[in-house]
Length: 111
Length: 111
Figure 1 (tube, chains in turn green, brown):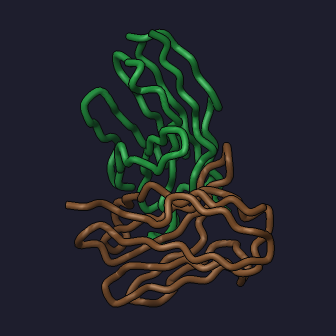
Figure 2 (figure 1 turned 90 degrees about the vertical axis):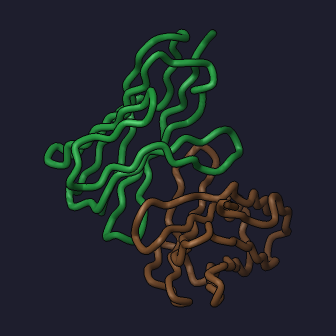
């Protein structure tokens, strides 16, 4: 059974810092991996999708990496801003049909 | 281009009642998945519909059922509501098994 773990559960940093969010998964037989952002009480916004054959994806200040062999992914956020405050969720696509999510990292950027 | 839409936004029901939630997928998408997100947790996969049939199901009881219509929209039905069914219900659409796009969710409160 696939299990996804995100560390840390919560993170608070001052504005302008670069930061890394971690995601680990137990079964390396994944189809792809997706990072999402969720604002309180809202739906999920897709940030980056990494196909299983890829090592990383970049979008603006965000960079996500994938190491299937070690069962790890990281989301790097450069020059953090207060607007980046949200919960960040990592999910692996299992069997090409369903997403298995971690519990998320609640990020607070302090002005 | 409208994204994934869900209705209603909020719903309050009493234990034992039945509820129907609705989802319209993003234009061009043919696959709809439903997820349940309890407070402070990551979303849990309920089931996925493709070509009007349930393609895969998560670990949810038969009280949870669904339907997909010829226009790819979908309904989630929950019978005999329990207090533990209180959650944010998220709909996601995709084209086959690619990147999933989520709607804003329906907040269900069971009293």
